[in-house]
Image (tube, rainbow, N blue to C red):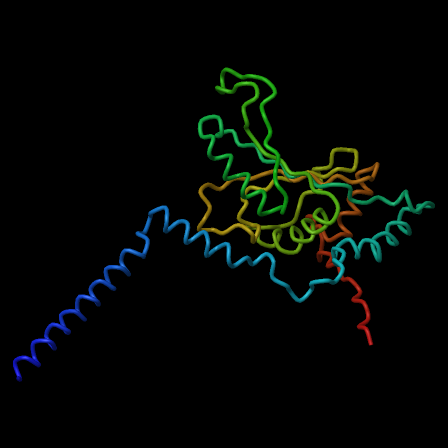
Length: 260
């Protein structure tokens, strides 16, 4: 009787083991192999399930605040320029109309992929998609053909223009190596100021480990002033650190009173 009772137990054990083995095999068969199409579909489905862009934040439903530097211009700079130059009309007071960031990539003739990296970095710095610039004529000595992409540029207006100027003055300029101020001889005689940046690393949006090649670009501040003297005063009051200033101007905006 003992042997008869043991036999079914062994059989049951084997059957249970077989069931476990089958379950294990079934589990292996159900899991997708890494790198396969099924694994990619599962990963994409997981990413689609979590959409961080649609999350509510603390300022949801509130009106967008005006740029800090624009508010400072309307409250302080405009009145100071009127008193200094004696403008009789409000529309005569100069203001900043646009900022143009231009980057020429001569090596893009031989390495077209290098221009893609420059475009991505300009988009991170300015917050706006750059426009690719093409060559207007062919130059045989440089191996350049007409219509070939050799640069990128961004034109900032409105809120993005004021935000970029604020970040450039308060964050980027202090990070320039051996910085002693900006030169005052870069005006074009019509109230526009252009300066060259040697490294894109001065902007905090650029991650040092992700940089493939260090390059520079030009920044042009276009104003509505008719004379360089007025444009210089405008940019100086907006906080632009020019060479020879004893102490840079720090824009301070009056905070609105808290609601009761």
